Length: 234
Image (cartoon, rainbow, N blue to C red; front, top):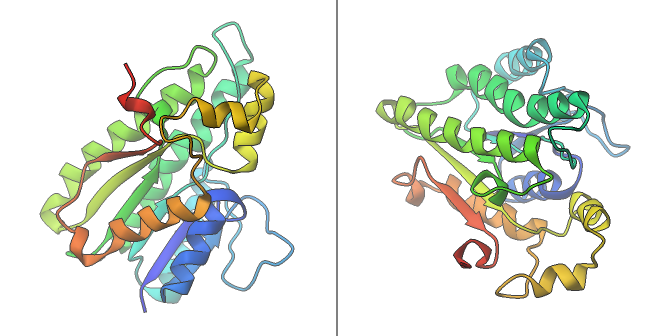
């Protein structure tokens, strides 16, 4: 049985990914800062922004399983900020999205098997373009894309693939919070998308599963948008 570690696995995209991989036969180790009420024995609390917490997580996984076949770096936080905003928010967003991805990759790489290991980093369309009030989030997600490309080259000799997914609007509590920040409705957000479709967490989970399949071993170093065609707009 293959082992997958999914960070930020208690809600939204992370929960959908964890459930989908479990249904596909993976032994899923789910993690987040706080355990949900329905957490089972395979949930391990972890703050990905804390290197010691991440090291403890992967030491536990290594002792129990001896390997990690797939690492899904999904944990992260968001929030509107500008350069005149709160420095604490900047550091929190960079810490969870960028430093968290770095810490988890660093800890997991020794446990990934040559030839079949997979890392998937959850970036964003804001890792491919800018938004005026999202300086920290855009900076973090652009950096995650850069980290993905660098690690893809570094791990290519071992046959380990590293890719990023870049969702646009997804039907999650984070998106609902962003609607409120922008003063728009979900219907108005849909109207801005060329396909007029907001992705579901399950659709993002499908993309994760596709990148984990043996048939996708030739795909590495890519940042795949899942945005209904938004990035194709002029």
